Length: 324
Image 1 (cartoon, one colour):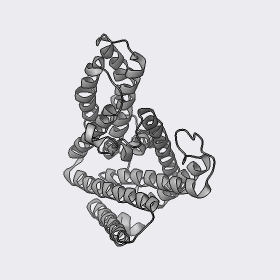
Image 2 (cartoon, one colour):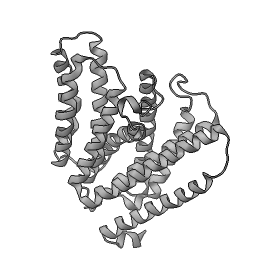
Image 3 (cartoon, one colour):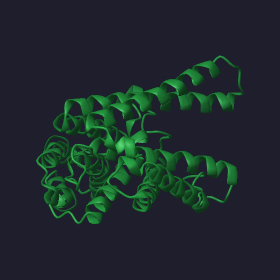
Image 4 (cartoon, one colour):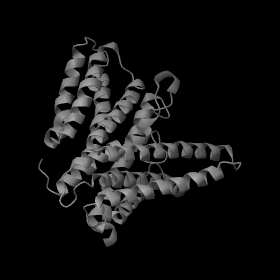
């Protein structure tokens, strides 16, 4: 670990990407080899889902590399584009009316760019309250000008929730790149990767544990795979992964374990909540109506990150007592 810390920042991040792309290449080769084998229909469906997820990971890894190589500004812009696509998927698969058009225009073309502009200029105190305070008050006001009281509260809440998850939650990921942490200059990319890895670890272990343990689901009507024992196993595995990666963070092993536990557990809760929203919308996945809406299922893949990123970001700020 000491030898890794002695490398320059560029060398450390270069090694990070070599390991990341190397691991993905190995997994892809194994998956390609297995794809020629015959398997039962239910196994084939799971394998096809795995292949789709693997392609999404490849895309995310390439985008992550491009974002780092291009600098913090391009990284922030890239996450802004992802927020736009995720919010579009959310809105197209939830019911809105003509009276909501003003609020939707405000969300896409005012709130979203302003939120990421605040991130880019590192005004973190404003960044944390802009959407939960000012935007949440502005959205119902603008919707009221649409002169349509039908299901007004329900429609307004859906728009607010879409902004909260797809814009507010997602914007905390690039904000990690810009945090001024002690003795951790220009290493923000490691923090983002740390977050992604612990959240992914929690998701995978929680899903595997739910099938292996076969415990009674907490809310069967929403998710048959979510149980408290599986959640604990997922969050603890995220903590262990976080502790193993402490050398890539500004934390010592124990704080790294705690941060991993917090981020992983939050991400799993986020996935659970998004399943409830999908049930309400009557879809199996946010990309399930591709021909009609143009949705590509991005929100399915980033939902845990959208929940974990703000919790992790503010936990880091609290840990280092950052005030601005």
